[in-house]
Image (cartoon, rainbow, N blue to C red; front, side):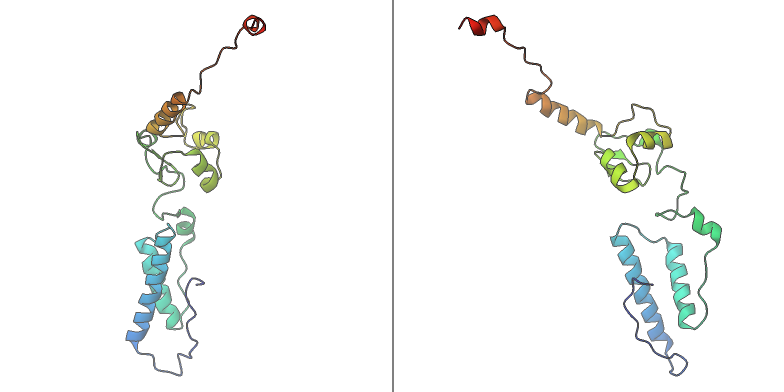
Length: 172
C-alpha cells in the first residue's frame, strides 16, 4: 500500500488498541485511496472499496489479507465493470454532432486520433479493425470537421491560383 502515508509502527500485541481508533484509521485510509483514484480518473468500484476495507481490518488484526480469485483479476478493466472485449457503447451510437465517444474508455472527444495514439497506443486503422468499423468511420466530430473546413475556405485554402500567362509578363 504505497499510496498511504506511513503508519507509525506499534506492537499491537503489547498495547491495547481501542476498536474506534482502528476503525477511524481504516476509514481514513480507504477514503484517501478512493479519493486519489477518483482524482486520477480511475475510480474504485464499490467491490474494490469493500475488499480494501476487509483486507485492512484483517491486517490490523494480524491475519493474512484476502486474495481475489484469479478469474476476477483477469476480467477486470480500469473501470472495473466491463469485460475487455466489449465496447464502451454501441459503435452506431458513438458519433454525435459535437463529439465522438471512444469505444475503448468512453471519453467524449472532438478528435479521436491523438487520443488513440497517446492513451491506447493505437492507430486509427487498428482501432477500426478492433471494433469492426467501416473504413470511413470518422476520427473527428462532424461539427468540428465542418467548422475547420469553413475556416479553411474563408482563408482561401483549397483554391488553385492559375498562373498568369508568360506572354503578358514579357510584353510589359
